[in-house]
Image 1 (cartoon, helix red, strand yellow):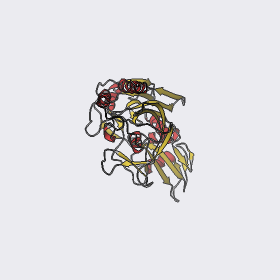
Image 2 (cartoon, rainbow, N blue to C red; image 1 turned 60 degrees about the vertical axis):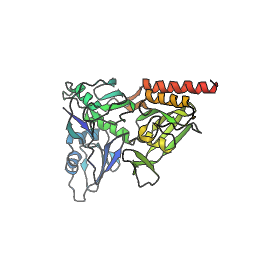
Image 3 (cartoon, rainbow, N blue to C red; image 1 turned 120 degrees about the horizontal axis):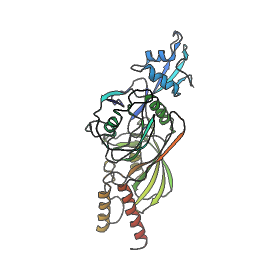
Length: 358
């Protein structure tokens, strides 16, 4: 069985690739100015000639989802293209078809219908195969789950990734079950209408209760594994994170993060940039004792917390979107997983004990 995953090597020259998730670019924006001598032609046929590798079905689905604009207005696939029309086409990144090995891997389904699947992902699970992780991923498990299922049209169901979250981040993940649903959901990510809220435990205290981090993100020159914030508007991709303090524990703080954009490692990189790395985030320096006393009991307390939560303290708590078919607002919440909840409880008790002088 094949499954649709982003083509990591596809980098269009004339088109703009737009990153709409924490992990991967899934959405493309094509701008086409129709030649002066172009004869009138159905738009779907015209675009099949102009966009390499795209199917008529995908174009028609994109038009139905309002993702094809002519001179700034949504148009149907049977629109007759005219000379000098400016056509903007928004589509998921052309997929690379890989043979995904179906594996019986358990995962929690929060919601499922004919168009979408919402999964509550455990920390430690990679979302899709890649270098060093060709098996044991969520996509392998989804392929196994869908292998004998058919949609309302009688066609085999294929999992379409709409976004990703990091291996060691837990929480809600949205999967499309057909191409039309993927296009609709990708458009919502592009328009920043998807609701995404994360809970993060970070080092340090904040002077304010709320704030916004604005800073372009690009691969660090010193370490390509991590993202860095750049002031130069020509470097990296625009990224905005809104944060709100939920609980203060003195040396660490529980915050809610709302993504306005969704870049790779956005919360992790932005929080380190303002001096508040995520608790036990080894890649971004949070696996060291960055705040607190020099007492050995305190050091042992923090190390115990690290052992309880052997990953970055980040959880995708809330996911909201418009259903691609019914257009109803869908809202899902995932409670803190046991490991993160246990560490938050330990810090809460530590802070209360400190205030009482225990």
